[in-house]
Image (cartoon, rainbow, N blue to C red; front, side, top):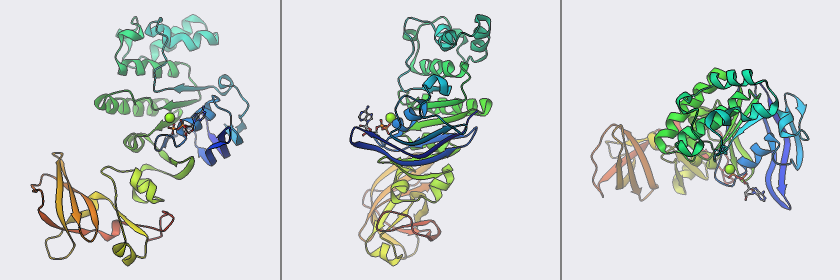
Length: 332
Ligand code: ADP
Ligand code: MG
């Protein structure tokens, strides 16, 4: 179990700044997700916590102790990567036991720990990584991290190589695992759905800076910036600027697709349908409005629309997000 604190942490590669003045506290037992677009610095931040990258400036505290200069081993953290990094010549059991073998734990205890953390791997124990599917390999990599009983788990896009259905199954398994172990976890992903479904707290990063820290619902309901509003949520938030935004005293206003609805009167914005996606449970309608621009509307249930059909769309004003000139959220 561990707390992690970053105080004014910055990182440069040579003269190129990559992370800028990161301040962050991860509470004991929390499942924190770092999310942001590719290249924003997520992996670098995680690697600095693991001890795999130097910290240029600032302090890293693990359990309140400054740990900038500790080796990865001294930090007692376990990291799981996107590429499974298993030893190809060892079978599953040997792969899982390897970290313990080099730590000098007695053999019977190693066997006991490995057996206790099967993650549905028992029937695969004698296979080598080459004889496993992607999902099975990643289970072994996670299992190998668990048997070490680290005080902190660091996971860098562990599900990115898996197909969509396996990813959602593994999300459930990871949530279960966290509930069971209660170990502090920091998980990096560029996938906002993984962030929303796994995290107790999300840290949104962009260009080496923290844009927002909050629970998934805080971030969804009150994005601190236009960037966060656009990055979190699918289909994406609508943004309207110009005349309509200035009516609300804003540079732009953001409206989530589920907060637009069909108006049956002559009120609302006139728009014509450009594309319809039928998901079965929902219908996503893309429409072009002369006054409001391109709009995405998410309607519950099944609806029939034709290309070019004219609609009136109204907005639920309680769910309108106002953003200023610098992209920051304006008070309601
Ligand atoms: P993310 O994981 O969010 O995709 P990274 O942390 O991998 O982002 O990278 C952040 C930035 O740092 C990128 O611009 C990347 O090119 C740069 N970078 C990462 N590692 C190195 C390195 N070893 N040397 C130089 N630049 C690097
Ligand atoms: Mg990365």
